[in-house]
Structure formats: C-alpha cells, structure tokens
Image (cartoon, rainbow, N blue to C red; front, top):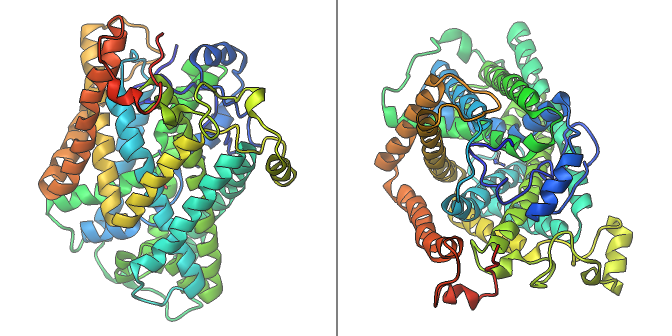
Amino acid sequence: SVSSAFDFTPALFPLQSTSGGYTALGAPSQVSLSLERGGAHDNLEKQKTLTFLNGLSLVVGLVIGSGIFSSPAQVNSHTGSPGAALIVWAISGLLTWTGAALSSQDLRRTRRLPLTWTAILVLKPGSAAIIAIIFGEYVIRAAIGADVEEINPWINKAPAFLALAVVTFLNCISTRFAARIGDLFMFFKFIALIAITVIGIIVAATGLSFNGPANTDWKSRNWFDGTTTDISSWAVAIYAGLWAFDGWDNTNYVTGEFKNPSKDLPRVIHTGMPTVIICYILANIAYIFVLPLATINKSNTVAVQFGNKVFGATGSLILALIVSGSCFGALNATTFTSGRLVYAAGREGYIPAVFGTVGFGHRNSQLPAPAKFRKRSWLTKKLRSIFGDDAGFGATPINGMLLNACLTAAYVAVGEFKSLITFYGVAGYTFYFLTVLGLIVLRIREPHLERPYRTWITTPIIFCCVSLFLVVRAVVNEPVQTLVVVGFVVAGVPAYYWRIRGRDSGGQREGEGRFWRRWGRGLRGR
Ligand code: ARG
C-alpha cells in the first residue's frame, strides 16, 4: 500500500475523501465520510477513480491559495532586493517539490501521536488562522480601497472571525453545500493568478498605466542591489515562501484513489510542483514590474495594490474580491479536513473522546452517522430545504470542528500574518525534518523494502539539511515562538505513553488513562 512520509492522516484518516471532496476539475467528488479503518479499506478498493489530470488539478488547486497574494511583502522586505526575493521563491519551491517527491516514498506507518497532536493543536488551526487573517485583510481592502495606509489590526481581524464562524457553521450542517463553495472559488484564483502575470508583462512591455505614472523601479536599478547578508533574514523570507507552497502534503489524501498510484503520483508531483513554482515566479516578476518596491514591501495585500496601480479602484476591488473568495474557499476546505482529523484522533484515543463524536456527541456514533441519529426534526427539514439532502446537525463531527474553530480563533486573536507563518513553518518543518531523517534511516536499515518509487538518496539529505537550517535559524531568531511549538509537541509525548503505549502493549493497565476517561470513553480496544 502507498503510505507516505508526511501523512498524519492516512493512518487515522482514510484516503477516501479527496481532501474533503474537493476536486478542482469537477463537481464535489464522491465525498465519503467513512473514517473507520476497516470500512475505509474495503471501499478504497472500489474507488480508484482519479486520473492523472484530476490529481494534478487537485494538487495545484490546493497549493495555490493565499500565499502568492500575501507573502511577497515578507519575502521582499527580508531579502532586501527583488532578485534575491525571486531566488527565495525558487528555493522554497524546490524544497517543497523535494518534500512532495519524498512524501510518496513508502514509509512504514508508525504511531504518530505527537504529529497528530501537533497537527490538531498547531498545524491545522495555525494554517486556518493565517488564511482567515488574509481573508480579513482582503475583505477590508475591498471595502476601503488600496490607498489607506494604516489599518487597526482588529478591523482586519473582524471579518476573519466572522468567516471562521460562517465556515464552521456551514461545515457543521452540510458537507456537500460546503464542498460546492470550495469548487467555485478554486476557479477564480487561477484566473486571478494568470491575469496578474499577463497584465504585468503587458505593462512592462508597453509602459501602460491607468493610475499614475508607470513604475520604473525595475528598469533603473540592479535587481540584486540591497540584498541582505543576514542569514536569519533569509530564513524568515523562506518561511514566507514556503507558506505559499504549502499544501503539497494534500497529495496524501488522494494517493489511494489513483487508478495507478505508483505511476500517477510521481507524475502528478513532478508536473504539479514545477507548474506552481513557475506560476509563482512569473507572478512575482509581474508584481515587480508594476509596483514600486516600497509598496510591495509593506503590503500584505499585494494583489490589491497591483489592481489599483493598473486599473484603479475597480481593479483593486475585483482582485480583493477574488482573493478573499479564494481564501474563503481554502478556509472552508481546511475546516472540513480538520474536523475529520480531530474526529479520527478522538476515536483513536489520542485526544479526549468527546471530540471523536458525530453530531452533538452521540458517543458511539461514527461517520457516516447511523440513521437513528439523523433526526428529522423541524430544524433538519428546514435546513435540508435550504442546503440539500445531507444537511442537518446529526451527521458531522461537530465537536471536532468546534475545537478546531476555537483554536483557530485563538491564533487569529494573538497572531498576525508575519508571526504566524514562521510559527507554522517551524512546527511543520520540524516534523518534515524528523520524518525525512527517518526515511534516510529506513533506507539504510531496510534497503530492499518495496517502495512505489525511490528518489536519489541525495534528495532526502538535501531536504534534511535545508529544513534543519530553517528550524535552527528559527530557534535563534524567534526563541519564544519556537518554545511554544516545542511545548505543544512535548505535551504530546506523555500523552502518547499514557494512552497509546499502554493500550498497544496488551491492554489496560490499572489506572491508565483515568484522567481522560473522565472526558468520555475514548479508548477502544482493537
Ligand atoms: N499554500 C496555501 C496558501 O498559499 C496554504 C495551504 C495551507 N496548508 C494546508 N495544508 N492546507 O494559502
């Protein structure tokens, strides 16, 4: 079977739902909510439907999100020059590509409680918070335009909280309705990205500008002038780039669904990732052509500035709406998967069992909810008339999604874009580093293990070096943030021994897990 280096999910979360039913090309796919192990594997055999193109659009669609419209300020200001910024985009793209290639190596499933734990506490809500914050900034820009300089952060955060609430609510009542929203916006962000690139090149070639004199920054300066030599600054810039490329791990959700995983998966990765890298570099060149560096450096909403410079207020409004729509779709998708991840972890006993329930907590229910829990109350009927047949509060992991929403809201409240991308990157790349290190060790210890395909051993080694550099730099630069991440991870370790080791080593020792039992009966013998 194809497992992967970075999956915290397949072990817990079957490969059934294509990232929450989002196929970029088509209708909301066969969303299957069966999260039970046995069931998932049975159905898996029947559902090998994804073709190469489905996979490609899925991966590209899930990677391209808020980042290319928000990270450039961080990348540019931390590298000091446009040339160096482009290099950072290339480095982070290549690192991501390498990681994605490695992720399709066959690794043994190990108990990954610490990773699941970190995913639930940091990675999932952290990425949702970043997306929500960018959503907020773009919505506010849509309302007030590109020119206002200083905006109170809480004004930006208000729509972020609101969107989080709406998305959580929608995901609690209906899976399919939520999936439809995602598909809609998937389309627009491609258009926006392509439009930005084409317009940028036209503007550079013709010198056209409808709003003020054309930008000549890029003509008059050396593109590497001002490049910083501070290595820490580069690390921060790379984290910003990595955010935009993040999401490649989503290939893990679909590996099992390919008709021919060992052939299609590498093809998807080796076409998808370079496509994204090229798109991002071109978009950045377009930004540099159109906008003065000072503007790029200080705006999290670079697409609004771009639209404003080229087409004035209408341009900035259109781009603000498209990007906020894209973020909304991404927030929606991540809420879906997070809810299921928390649910699965609750059922495994990794976290208190109240989170592993369906609806408002029918303790032993599972997804899909048994018919007796799908109550047809007046409310349910009403909801179904609005949202379609599957609506109702009885069939989704509500507690799991609420936990995720609360954590996300906390990150939105205390964080800002700049700090959260580093925070997220440190947590993510600590694990990527450890996992790939594990892969190298496995290669050496069990060289003959069957793998769908293998990369050169140099690839994981380079990956390890770069991610180690990033993590170490973060420790030096942002000790507090790193400490918080480490705290979260370490908190998972005692829980691991307490809960999982006891169970797997043949049973329930006296007193084990007493604390968590109070939260519900989570421990199920297997
Ligand atoms: N690359 C995406 C963006 O630029 C972020 C993806 C979020 N990560 C994830 N695993 N869902 O917005």
